[in-house]
Image 1: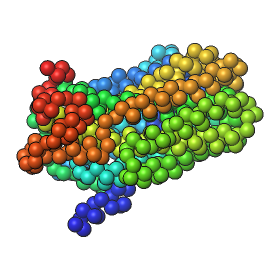
Image 2 (image 1 turned 45 degrees about the vertical axis):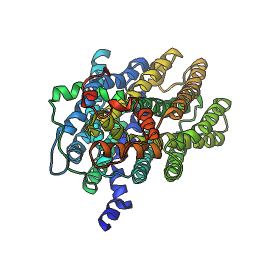
Image 3 (image 1 turned 90 degrees about the vertical axis):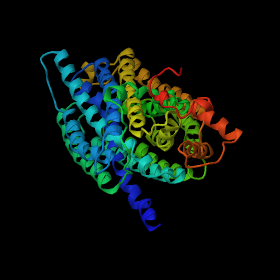
Image 4 (image 1 turned 120 degrees about the horizontal axis):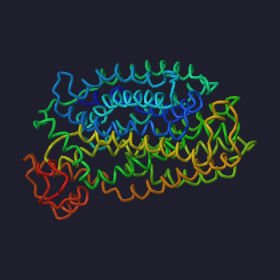
Length: 493
């Protein structure tokens, strides 16, 4: 009993959560500053700069499912997932620095190819760490409530990483047209990320279990069958729209403060990011505590309506000379709502492997994690690409940006509309998907009990209500569950 209490105590939760300082921090830096780095410091057009993360996502379509399959097929004395955390700690730090190297090519094509290649390297390093990390918790903890507690601490660590990633660059990058500060920031965070991942490696554990015994070719082809689960399909909608709404805020924050408010100097951008990130940290703690007594959907269902109202109110103060205190107050509410999305998403993610196992009879958390990580990066890539296209559509000039001059009045208005309405649309979609998501604690307990029945560990007979729950959560008829063929091909028949 003491061993169990020690393993599920606060020290273990913090050790488990530490790696998401990298997961949360890296994406904040990228979504906030990478397009800015390419447009303002390197002189690339916003339309081109915005597509670079999307190119990385095409590459992720190969690497994420491949990594998930490799994890499920790996046997190590450290545990398959922890082994790749150890390997990935160095790889992730190195590839993060390479993204921010100043490179003045002779041609636009040469510059584009270089940064697209560096982004693909970073994305590969991120995959090596985050796919096994996302798959780790189901092999550490079985209990629904304890998983939620671990996920809550993970989200707090992720938010702490986001705070560091949101504040340190804004302090160091005083001149956003100079590439050198971006590189210095990257080197500092490479060390932070390395240490954080190694803490998780040292402080976690995982159950040893048989590896998935199918060929890599077969395993890779079957990765997309995790999407056959009704719960996973709806989860994808929550993940894409919820995180996309956050990415639009961080991805446009520099443009909004610099070009619309004309308030980048004097520490105002640092204040804005500090308020948003502090609100996320506070919101993560509050929502993380509440999901244990409410549901994993509660943070989004409560937080997003309030965030929508605050976002819409920003329209009244999106001009030069606006009361910055009011903007900060509204940004605090927005940050609280962003926290709700993260808490819900990562709490739900830990349960997706159980639903998949009931459908396929195969325990493949690595594959589920790989496909979820792929979705997360697709969300970031799409938001970056859409931001770039929309900025170009409203007349954003990279020539003016690189010269440190302001955009036209029409462009400033366009940036405001993107900053306000794009997140609102995505938040409404997130609310719809969350409402449709079919699993809370009661449903989870039915799913795990049914898995025990199928394994011969529970000799009870499923009730009509339990059968209906299994069918609702999985999207499969009861007699077609626990069938290995469900993992072999996308077609259900």
